[in-house]
Amino acid sequence: MTDTLIPGLELEPPRTEWKLLAIIFGILIVLIAIPLLRWRHHENRRPTLVEVRVVAATESDPVFREGARIVGPKEKVSLAVALRLEYPGDGSRWLAPVDRLELDGALVDHIEAESWPETDRTARTFWFTLESPFLGGRLDAEKAQSKLAVRPFLAPEMGQAFLASGEPESHADDGINLGDTLVPVNAGTYRLYARVEVVANDGSSRPLFAATSAGVDQFDNPAMVRISRDLVEAFNPIVPATGHLFRLPGFEGSSDWDPANVCRHLIATSSETFALMAVTGQCEGDSPALDALGRLDVSKADVTSTLRWQIDVNPGDIVKQGNHWLVLVSDDGDGSLNGSDLVVHSWHRPPAMLPLADALDETSTEVIAYGVAGR
Image (cartoon, rainbow, N blue to C red; front, side):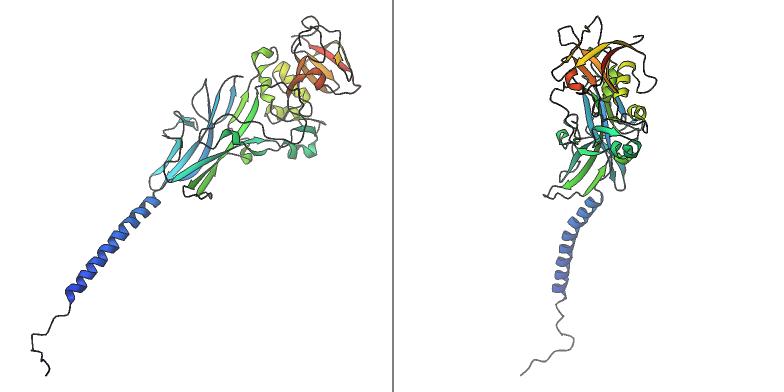
């Protein structure tokens, strides 16, 4: 016998259970969506790297800024990168690991930090010098453009931090034998370029984004950091600014290129322009009048002469072997001008200080010492 349904007393469908399931499902959706929305909001507001500039400061001028600097022979130079970060919807801010930062001629209110402002990302700096891959040789108008062109050389000794761990070494090496008797000279000019990459701290080496400072294509940009170091005063009367030409390539050649112009822009030098700088402080202009002081005898064994220091010759006097100009620096202690006395010169290679005998060519060309008239 089957039960009959009484009209008006039919059972309600289980709506309560469905409502409860819907509420639970909605709550789960919200619980999942909130972290996702917060994550998306966080990701959308992350800073991005949009610009990098190299800046420098010295002991006498501790404000970090761009551009060229002339520094003393023993003056410490600090090098750093300044990063411009773009915050979506909130503009941009500069970040640098320095106390005082000046950009475009004005002090900048910046974030002072030595690392990327997020803990799950890391920024790494790759430092480069901008140098000519050719250290010297002969040059004519046809080859001048290619041989004087510069390219970046990685400088790993500077580390990968926003604040460099020191100044860069020279990295260009085209096989020229610079000799074993060079006397170290703390002088020279160098230019810097930097690339900053931001990576996630998940083991990935692929950068999320990267930016570079002014490089080869902006070699003449006045904002590029260029450090030129003077010679020590002990080399007087050699002009201290002669030190700016060290680390530059040295070329000789025909008159189809202008050595004075590339010397003035601290790109390269020649034997004569280097000597002119040493005695006049200028790369260009008429050569100074020279008074012949005496002849030097050159053999495979040594270089000898009858000339005496402080009587016949002095520091800053010139020795010439054809078109090769050398500038006397100091006596070896015996009082006579000979092969072990120190000179500075540039001859088919970057400027260097070394003994006279090692600087001269073993040729039959006459070698004569000159005094600079009027000095």
